Length: 119
Image (cartoon, rainbow, N blue to C red):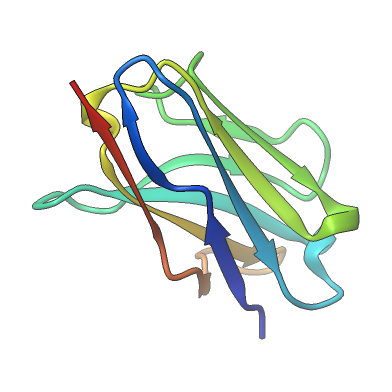
């Protein structure tokens, strides 16, 4: 079982930046792929960025490419999402999720953190 705790959300003006953090419990963090998802009111949850357990395996949604950066620090059991040039349409609840190597889906989720971008 993995427990995930997000932090770093808040209110920011358009064009601003935020960094989200997600810290995982357990000693097998380095074997999990980690993802950041978001869900805006009235919309489905979408994958924003994902980082694998091996170097170089990173995915970004087209809507955030060039603005968001995902990274991980296995020594700290933490994954980050640096969000720059934020837009009002980035407003959503952001969730951290973990996926074991053998899993097709993300079974472990954090509680979510609100990001609000004002125009």
